[in-house]
Amino acid sequence: MLKTLLRPAYTLTHALLYQSRALNPWFRQQYGAQVGEGHISDEHLDHPELDDRLVADLQNRGIPVKPWVIDAKGYQAYLEAADYPADYYGGGLDPEANFTEKTLEHYVSTLFLDLGPDKVHVDMAACNSPFYEIVRRVFGVRTSYQQDLIYPSGRHGDRIGGWAHELDLPDGSVHAVTLHCSLEHFEGDSDRLFFQKLERVLAPGGRVVILPFYLAHTYTIHVDPAYNLLKGHRPTLDPKAALRYCSWRQFFSRHYDPQALQERLLAAAPSLQLTLYRFTNFREVHPPSYLRFAGVFEKVR
Image (tube, rainbow, N blue to C red; front, side, top):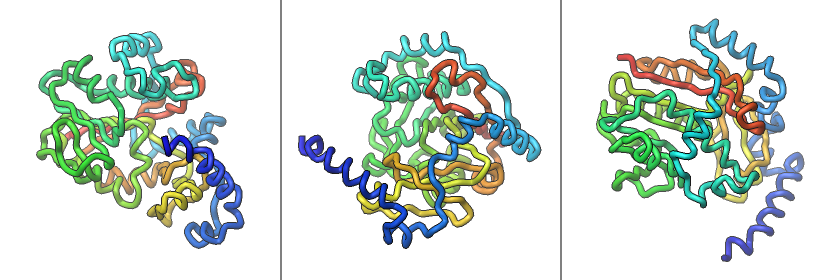
């Protein structure tokens, strides 16, 4: 109740702070003067030729990129079987609630995984997502966990709390890991440390599916300076990355260029083999979608 009453004041305060970003001395002290504006992914969505060049660069570096057509009928069949709760992003009744994008990401991730009764699955940075339970009910996976930093630390039933790189599971025990719109929020070295952890916990042939996998022509970190100030958070930045301001009420979002992808993720986990998938019809399936790429990492040794 109190949160509902305070929301308009918070929204106004955030808006005023963000509008003052060019003049705010705290922002300059925290982030410096060389800051861009807006999500770099919007440039790629508006200009698909940027993705064409990105794919060429990736392939020149020996990273395979394969086209993939999303099956719209398959997605609808998945939705019927999944039977999402009504309180998950409005249950599909509110067009502003992002239900279609979230559930489309869930569906597509299942296409790249070998799910069955004897498999162990972890949905990372899951927050309140019902996906781990859907994996059990629809695909018959007996052991499916949801992990998030907001949960109590350690393993508690089917929930695992703490940092992603502290994942409390035995080495070689996991067959499927999903990250839906989450890896980009891993600050500092947590992305690199997480991939080192994946090398240990994945069973041979185990897979990690990351989607959307945010790739761009320039290695970029996005911050919402007003949101960080209001939350008392100082995000850990990377001096190698270009920095951009965005008003989207998130702490941090990292988009990799091919070199950063190699240096931060592939070098951290050499036994994980990456195949990228470029979705050719994501906006035909859902016009506002931003599901450009998925990354599938498989443990090969």
